[in-house]
Image 1 (cartoon, rainbow, N blue to C red):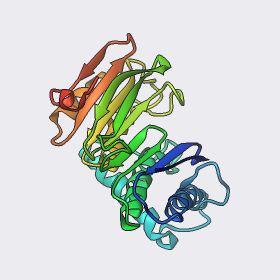
Image 2 (tube, one colour):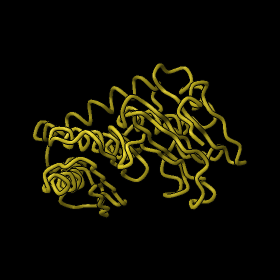
Image 3 (tube, helix red, strand yellow):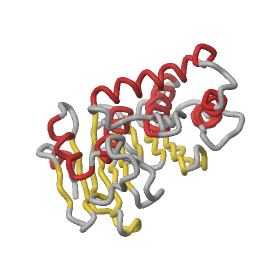
Length: 248
């Protein structure tokens, strides 16, 4: 098995490939993440999103990737009653709530296209797995305690599905409720969402966190989604089907 971790997109990204895939494949995956960072980073003066926000290019001049991400953001906004909204109060766009899951999903597609079917991709807690681990068993994914990052509070076997966690423990208050601008989300500290793939998990985890305590009910009502929320008092609540993925 080849396993590497690089710091890209402002976070550690880990890629593991079990199969005897071409040696260059894992390098191609990290090169892809570097390209995503160059295109979508809000902290780079040379990124495409910065150029768009500063008016140096128009939407018509943007890449196919940018159009795809912005279309996904619009779709998610409609599906979440406006709780997912990439437009900031100053009118600029911040697609970071969807780019990470989108990039991980695309990286997984790149791995499969390169001839591997047993793999693991983790970008800052957004995880996509395929096949089995090096021991021939299901990949096990841990949800960290938002009050103690060294502690795993749930271990999950996803069976090829994706998971994403949104919260305040790592980055502080960076998600907001578009319907109550300026109000901190302080009734929950993290929410994890399991979906058919990591992109679906990521976009709905971000929206569910913006809803606060109501977010877990939104996840419960959505077909094909399961969730696990930890509130500000440390009390966890899970959706009715979440237990099917729990191994410890």
